Amino acid sequence: MKNLLVTGGAGFIGANFVHYMLDNHPDYKIVNLDLLTYAGNIHNLDDIKDNPNHIFVHGNIGNRELVEYLVDTYHIDTIVNFAGESHVDRSIVNPGIFIDSNIKGVLNLLDITKRKGLEKYLQVSTDEVYGSLGPDGYFTEETPLAPNSPYSASKASADLLVRSYYETYGMNVNITRCSNNYGPYQFPEKLIPLMIQHGLDGLELPVYGDGKNIRDWLHVYDHCQAIDLVLQKGKPGEIYNIGGHNERSNNQIVEIIAKRLHCEDRIKYVTDRLGNDKRYAMDPTKIETELGWKPKYTFDTGIGETIDWYLDHEDWWRPLIEKAKFDRFNYQG
Ligand code: NAD
Ligand code: TYD
Image 1 (cartoon, rainbow, N blue to C red):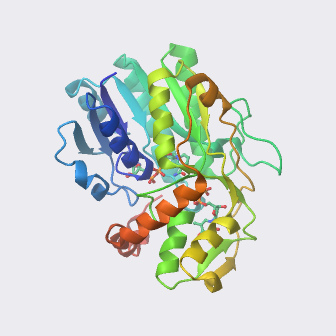
Image 2 (cartoon, rainbow, N blue to C red):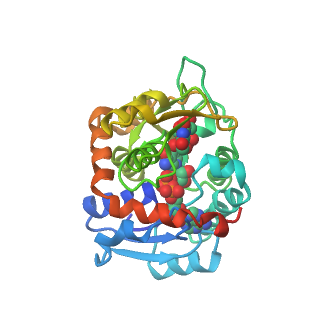
């Protein structure tokens, strides 16, 4: 493996992954295909724009001619797919685009992987495909799929397509399912960066419902390291759960941020998201024991560094907030 097509590499996790791979594999070439939707930000790649091992291409994973052209021109041997719509709230309002990018786009990538005989296809998926847990237990790779939102249903559909390409054509595919990521470059619509921005801008910190929903927080660096491991050592057809051993309620997260920014008085309980899953918690034993993955971050270190990053990078996130004001006129589902 040497020539990677990384899709969605201008988004939060994709951009972190591109940086991680360029730092850790100087012999790799990375072609980064991204549609630059509202969530894709070319400035996430500013510091690597002159790196000869990174080629950015603006385009859609669903564009067959373009993807084939890139595979042929750059002798791509591996596809890692981060591209897609990623926000549950948007999927509740506008599910259509989730079908186009998260399902049809994946089908196009899989089909090209098959026809061009590529070495590997890795699909970046989510713990949300398993649905919601009660107070006990964990998601394992054997947990049945039971997605609850249009977003997670689109991701589960893609996972089933990936599985079918392994079963039917014997392709070398992997699916990684991670828990909620946090860290630098996350678009400020997700819980942690949104609360930081609201805290800094004197706005209310809107907690959905009773705030007792639980997510299992994973630092994006640890996620990137895990994906790299699966690329190097993952067995064909296998699924790997990636989780941070960091269950926290939304209330706990918001309290940490509010305390740090001295705005506890602005925490506001608002109407819950429709179908808000109660609890996600991953059992990452398989990737830990079979591939030797070990997260580097504790939550305390990770969240502290992440808040610092947003405080130091106002010039990164403020233009996104300005642009998002006009988003509803341009965004079509
Ligand atoms: P993101 O929304 O920050 O980035 C998605 C990127 O994909 C953007 O750069 C966007 O422009 C691009 N994109 C969207 N549709 C495209 C298309 N049709 N063709 C090409 N590019 C397209 O998302 P993220 O948080 O970085 O998530 C990346 C992947 O990881 C997603 O597939 C998501 O489902 C999955 N995931 C994310 C989390 C999380 O906590 N953020 C957790 C589990 C799984
Ligand atoms: P989010 O960051 O959107 O991730 P996901 O839905 O993929 O887990 O939301 C995490 C949790 O935080 C979820 O229970 C919804 C809640 N939430 C709020 O309470 N307020 C907010 O403003 C947002 C964006 C999310």
